[in-house]
Image (cartoon, rainbow, N blue to C red; front, side, top):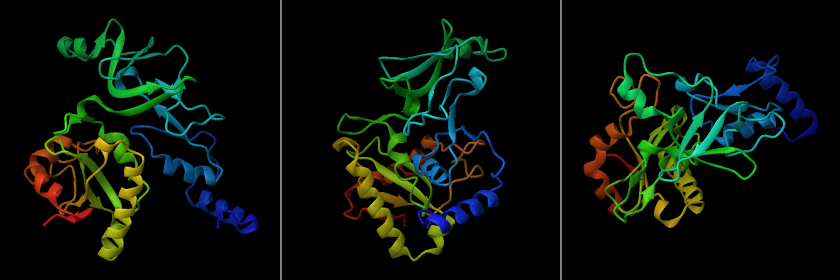
Length: 269
């Protein structure tokens, strides 16, 4: 409907006003990578969201997406006075700037692990594009090795599922099996939709995601878990990040059983 000339313009204005963004001039997103599908939706409304990549340790300043040259799949270019390099050993993003923290409060040992010769070790993995944009590929601590001996970086795989509105939370796991699995919690919409429709949709998304992956990265199945992931049960941090190690402790014994099943969408029993 947004593509219909007259109706589309009226609908865009209605959505923008309904979101309270009709007076917004600068729109930034941060904290966690924003799926491209979300940014594309806002672009259809005429709103260009600029990605900001940073962390507390560098006082919230590292890269910024140029307003007039937005590149999907990246988090923008280094801000003025920011230097970025990629560790060749593990692809960790290292950055240096005048505003990097001097250290953690009364914790010199931890400080030495994170800041070395002025370079902040972000814990994120990434790569620089030929034209100077930073592309994040995952977290150093999240990378795991399958039983095939291949390293799996979960984040890019997980981002591929973000467009499916039946999924609320998703985590790629599988350090003890040949191919990874995707553990998923259904969204409120997914819980109210007939199960067969949800399963068909997830199977389709799984097929689309796998088509873009290398053989060893391809997800064997999506497993719908019964229990929601929350701060209260320890699966989420207070800032709502998924604790992958908690899910591994809870479900690792079943990874092998789920891997052996023929279905591409499995319900936790």
